[in-house]
Length: 293
Image (cartoon, rainbow, N blue to C red; front, side, top):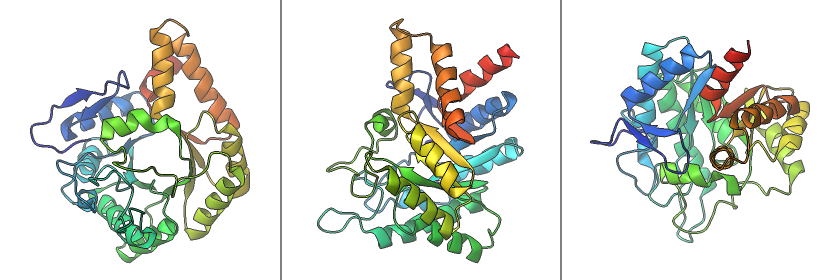
């Protein structure tokens, strides 16, 4: 969702056919369509009119996510509205937090801003907060901040096992959040280290997470299963932009049957142990499943 003045209501994302940047009004229409299709909820990401060093647009009460969350809840109150809580879409350097002079991310300073952002989303009407920054201690800080502001019943979906992945490229282009220098391996996870993924999920549970996530999804089915078994909490799998783009490209080339491939992928994630699947295929999948019934 974007709040930029003069931005089109819908703007096609070149690397992700069928996915668009949306104005607040268009996001409401999209949410209404999602509800009509029987989807469980939507996950909001914001693109501010202006970016700065700290990512201050993230906690602006008149920001894109805040405005969209409130508008969607008024229009479709029964639809769950989740919000991504991070700074990367809002910083002019593209990293997920406050930078030190040496260019590394200051974990503790970032956590303060992440908690502030989470509270602003809850105030706006978001039902579920999903911190994706991968800073240490952010789940506990968010829980404490929410409780202090009276949002004791607002749950947290922690991006617990978020890997430094090659599959995020299309999203970063869409959100303008590609790091201006370096990469995110300092705070995202090593794809070879599955044991750490389970440890991180358990730490988030201890800090008060109500759900945990594995991201990306397609190459991490083993860790979806491991995290589900270790935590006992509902597990979300994020079928990310690069996974979506690969299917679209192969289908466009006539190499695969898109419908069959998508439903097979989503079934595999469910089989691995995902209770919730976040996917750019969701609307198509809902239509296809309805046709089967």
